[in-house]
Amino acid sequence: MPSNYHRRHRSAPSQSQATKRRNKIKAAIKQAAAAAPPPTDDLLQPDDVLVTKEWLAKQMGISTQTISRMVHSGEFPRPIELGQRRRWRIRDYRAWLEQKSAATLEAV
Image 1 (cartoon, rainbow, N blue to C red):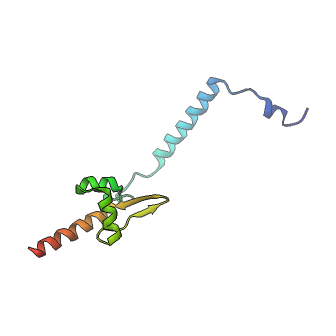
Image 2 (cartoon, helix red, strand yellow; image 1 turned 45 degrees about the vertical axis):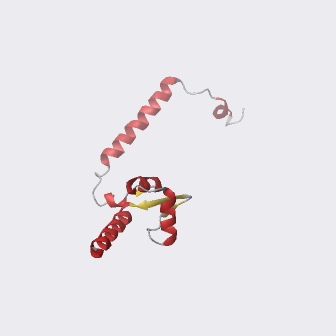
Image 3 (cartoon, rainbow, N blue to C red; image 1 turned 90 degrees about the vertical axis):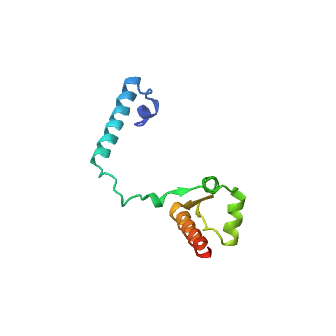
């Protein structure tokens, strides 16, 4: 009989074996999470959040097409491209808002 015969023809693990394996994995994940340092403010700042065009449109009260036109004309910050997806940094949006509000105040 070939040496790998038993490997190919062994039966599927019983439910109790699968449950034991799953519990072992869960315990290892918990242990790793407990050993990991707690998240700090340096890792992810609120300004690092990425938002969609739909979210921006809703916040600004304009259409997504208007945002596209503004980006194309240079009036609005360009998005970050993640594969085929485009996202904006919330800090870029906030900086743009501050710039617009400062320009509006200067005009008054």
